[in-house]
Image (cartoon, rainbow, N blue to C red; front, side, top):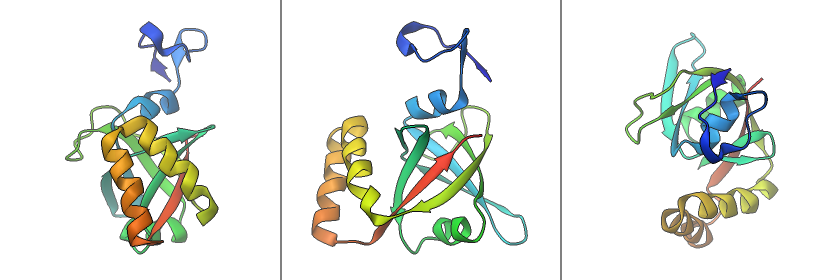
Length: 139
């Protein structure tokens, strides 16, 4: 568990904030997936919380999607836009979600990221269905 950050978080239980609470507030999340040989591959992504899960909207034929389909094993940590971790990584489980989840994720991206999230949602409307939704659970 991560010590409580205090302030308006309001999500701490018994003075402790859970890793998913910290990751929910991070502007970027470092998603690390693993190749067949165990080599880690890290990518900074936008992530939004929906329920008890983080959601990522990503390119459908990306390497991370292929690795997630093969094995749901991952690690996540808060990071900078360039992928430099700024917190400890925690183990996570990832899974591909149905395309029907995309509108909720896109709306959450707009709510969290403002104009950039809105632009992302607009590009989806023009480009079409080239993206996939990934669900990330922290045990």
